[in-house]
Image (cartoon, rainbow, N blue to C red):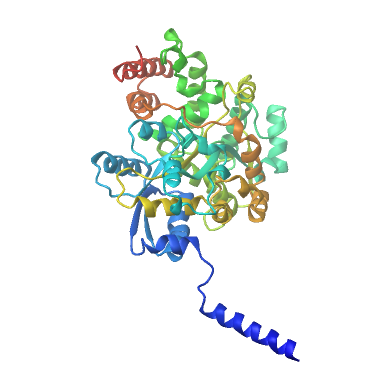
Length: 477
C-alpha cells in the first residue's frame, strides 16, 4: 500500500512538472521568434511549383515561425527584369529571387547572391535540424560554385519530355489507318522521321474528320525567347548540337568555320525539321510560349509534343484544367543516331533538364529570416505533397514518398523516367554570357520564324552574331 501510494505521488509530481514545463523545443518557432513580424518578399515566375510556395509553403512557414512571406508570381520576363534591377540598384526590395538554372552562372559572376552553405556554417544557430543540402538530387550541383557551396535552394527540377495521347495511339481505327498508310505500327516515335510521320498523319486525320486536332505542339512564338529556347535547348540537342553550338574549348566558337556547330549541317537539319512541325501544328503555335504549349496539349488539340515536365501532373490528372486526364503517355524525345550514345558517354544530352532555385540576394535586408525560409522549403518533409501538386523533384527521398509513387502511376511513369533517365538530360551550358548571346541572336531567329530569312542563312548570321558578341565581351581572343 505504501509502495502504491509512493508511485501515485511520483506520477502526480511528474504530471505537475509536465504541465508547467515548456513544450518540446521547436526549431522553427524558436528560431523565428526574434524575427516575428518581419515580412519577406520574393519574386518568381507564375508556375505550378512557384504557386505552391505562395499558396501553401509560405503560409505554413508563417504559422511555424511568425515570419510573413509575400511571394510575387509574375511573367518570366518580368520576373527577371524585377530581380536583376533590384540587385543591380541594391534597393533590397526582394529577399528571395527565383534563379533559373540557365542564369545562375551570370549571377555568380556578378556576386549577386549570398553563399548559403557558408552562411549556415558561420551561424549554426540558423541551421535547421531537418535541412541537409546533401539530400538534394544532383540537380543542386547547377547552383554551386567551384568550391561546392550552394547559392540557391532547388525548388523545381524537371525534364522536357515527349507527351502523347494514349487514347489516340491506342484507338483501333486510328491504329489500323496509320498501319495502312505507313506500313508501321502506331507507337511513340524514336526518331525524327517517325515523329514527323506521326505528326503529319494526325494533322491530316484531324482535318479529314473535322476535328480540332493536330499532330504536334510547337513552342514557336515569333517574339518571345521561348521559341529560341525550344530550338537550342530541346530540339538541336536531339540532332547532336550541344551547348547551343558554342564550343568553349575552341575559343568559344559558334560558326563551323571556327570549330563551332551553331550553323552546322546538323543544326540546319534540326531547324528545318522543327519549322515543318510548326507548320502542321495548331494555329496558335506561332504565338505559343511554354505556357501555351501546355494548355494546347491539355485542351486535346495535339496528339503529341514536347512539354515541360512541370505541367505533366495537371495535364494528366486535373480534370478541371485538362481534357486529356487519364490519356497522357510519356516517352523520351525522338533522336538522331548517335545522340543517345553521346548522352550515355557524357559527351552530349538528349534534351533539357530544367528547373530553378530560390536564391538570397546580397542586397536583402532580412538575410537571416530568409535563410530560415529557404531551409524550410528545402527540407524533405514538405517535398511529397509539393511533387504531387507540381511534378518537380529536388530531394532524393521524394521518389520514395507513397503519394509520389501513386502519382507516378497516373503520370504513366514520369517520376520513374526522371529518376532513371534524368542523367541523359542537361541544363543550359555554364555560360555567364547566357543572356547576352541570346539577345544578340534572337532577333535573327525571329526573322527565320517570320520567313524573312532562310533557315540556312539565318543560322549563318546567328553564328556570326554570337561570335561578334563573345568577342565584344572578351571571351573570344
